[in-house]
Length: 150
Image 1: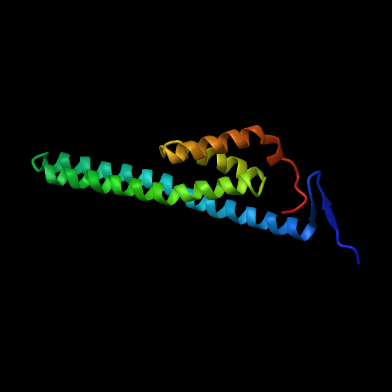
Image 2: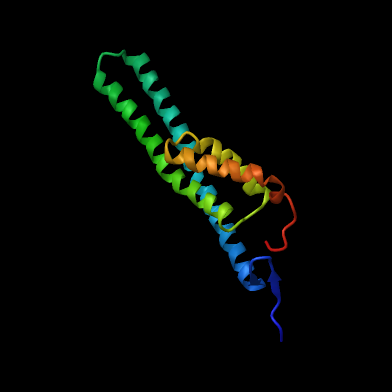
């Protein structure tokens, strides 16, 4: 029985290998997208912490600088944790797009939103975001074409 072969200009890849690569790219994109939720959650947590800080200043006055410093510290910690979680997510999504060539409409949309958030993570996040934006915008049509393998 002859094996079904996918023919490309540069190499011959079996359908089974192509499906395994597609599955790996899909899961990298899913995990990366979930990790990327860390950044907006971290920013939201920072905003909530700052609102609580300003409410306490309004109620009790600004007499104690330690209270104010503690509130700012809490807000910054949540931002840092969001960035620490989201940066590996951006890298996983970039690997899914660049190396596994995972192309789905949801990946395109998530990538655009994620790249916009990732631009704020200077310097590494900015570099990753620019790579993602350039790659996905240049290949936009490939995300919306029907794929042979899911």
